[in-house]
Amino acid sequence: MSLTAEAAPAALDACPISADFLPANLRKHVDPTAPVPLRMMGAKSLVPLSPSDMLGALFILTFDPDAGVRETAAKTAAGLPERILGSALRDEGIKPPVLGFFLRIFQTQDAYAEMLILNPATPDEAVAGVAEAASARLVEIIGQNQLRLLRHEPILRAMCLNPQASPALLDSVCDFAVRSGLVMADVPQMQAARVRLFGPEAIAAPPPGPTAEEVMREFDAASDDPTAPPLDEGKRMTLSQRVLKMSIAEKIKLATLGNKEARGMLIRDTNKLVCTAVIRSPRITDGEVLTCANNRAINDDVLRIIYGSREFTKSYTMKVALVKNPKVPLAVSMKFLNVLRDAEVKDLSRDKNVPSGVQMMAKKLLEKRTAPKKEKE
Image (cartoon, rainbow, N blue to C red; front, side):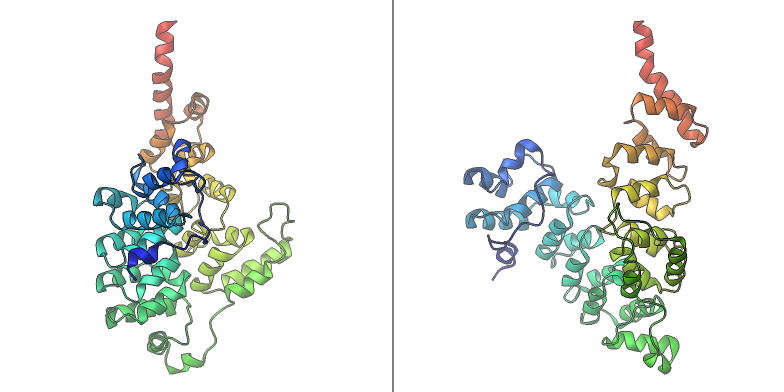
């Protein structure tokens, strides 16, 4: 069976994403209740969509109830031109299942596979799925993403089975993983790294600190439900101490899978991989991200992810928060300042707590916006 044929799921499978990202007037081209000719237009990429939206539409159509539409969409996806793929595959705003789908299609085409592997929104599971057979170039790129390696163990497991991965690369990656507290007793390269770093006695030594699963069970008094009562101070202090004793690898797992209380503790961690894992957690809420954007002491890498995300910066309140944060580069602040309403711009021009550069630019922008009105008067 060809890869293109494999890429077209069975009609009975439910598509994991909705068509909300598409312009309302064009959603009919992926609507399973619309006439087949309309859906076929979408499957042949004959609909005027942006490159990123086109990838999402084709993905949805591979779940179409009509076999002809499914097969056409899969074939079109595999044959998209570079002018579309070159920009779309890098877009972090594309839904993760879409990126995973295209990584499976282009896993043997290094140029496109590299873009997808480097895209933080591409699912870890998809990267693990190609790591075992990836080229030497790709497996090295996979090995450079420390957060993915610690967050999703199957990636490292697959790398260790890849004949294209050089011994030097695997030694380096496994040494890092062991130092970070990752324990994979069934992987020979990881066991060799433990001996190399800590001696033969390390093989029988228990893993350092509590595991993410253990700590998550202790967080059971607090959930992501906003109506749940907060932890009392005594239990919070106890859990904070437990979290401090965790290895980096376990903290990253807790940041990814834990609840709001856990994320609130870990976002302040001094290790950038840990706080980055928090902001990239699939469970993080818009309110938590806004709190981070308002935090003047937040890690630079976390802030960079926020203002670089198309999804996060859709919110008007988020734009205001980022403009006010002195750690955001002035060029980025200016981009958001230009779309703020006059009332917010006026407030910023008078606010002594915002960076002087932002305050000055707010004054200039306000003068520019009000000048035509004054001339008419």
